[in-house]
Length: 429
Image 1 (cartoon, rainbow, N blue to C red):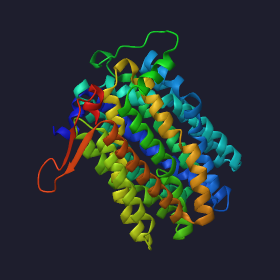
Image 2 (cartoon, rainbow, N blue to C red):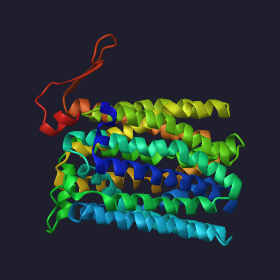
Image 3 (cartoon, helix red, strand yellow):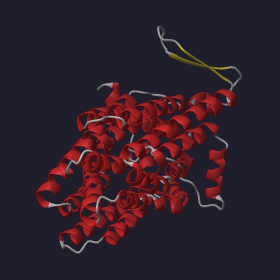
């Protein structure tokens, strides 16, 4: 088996990968259906309403993120996953039933989005760290990359299927289908063999454990840099649900199928980025920053495309840069932290990464509504370039780096520490 797919040698991880692929298809279908329902059925092309719906799904990360990470460090992750996946499935079925009955209103969608946000806030740190129990430590970066590949392979299928279903039978059935797909994850987790797991040390009950997690992150400058970069990019740049919907509907006058196609094409680049990430054994901070620069350039080009076809094609490099950046950030943090702290650190990371969306989505939605969707995308491009530049300058000065790019020699990018670095910076930068 090639290095790219080496984690699939382990039976428990194979179960997880297959079930996650099914569930992720359903998740992407629901995202498309939810945005289309809000944009075209419950409002008159309101980008603000779509932004609020998206924001409500991520508000809980800001409210309870540190506590959910502590639970992931303390409690058995298999049981937590079964509970959170079941809750998310019931919410999808409930919204589907409401839409099919013809009684859905905008505030109903807001309420279900908030409920899904709370369920996801508990699910995310557990799901992110559970993979460390399915493969040996030396395969963790590969497994994280394959998880991203699964998520984005689903994005290739989910939006297109959602577009077809919306056009054929309406968005209600899309929510129902998504609710059923969560059964695959629950079943897979239930049949895994505990004897074949790499069980991690759990954090004992003690006072001040959340503060301990905050101190740990504050003492790791490499993790702080990653969090700052990803928070800014997530706030203004990673709003594809919103910007794609507005570009398809407002800028190009297209329907649900063309909107769904945008998500699938974006996933082509994302899947390529995930598979490349799965081959890297040691992702580093510089890859996160480099991918952020690439994302800034790709989104600028994407925003300026004059035709629907040009916009579709330039979604591929946008997806490639975005996924490379996100997977490198996730892998760098997971592979470099103390295992007993992993749940809390990942919860804090997801808090700043996903929790910034409630701030950015309404703002980006307002910009798109007031000035046009192209300007909404360009705001993400400019802010991403700015934070990547600032992170580069800070790292060079604070870590005493000398950076050289050599076009004709490998490695092309050479980073040399002028002073002896701290151990965590040496391994991550």
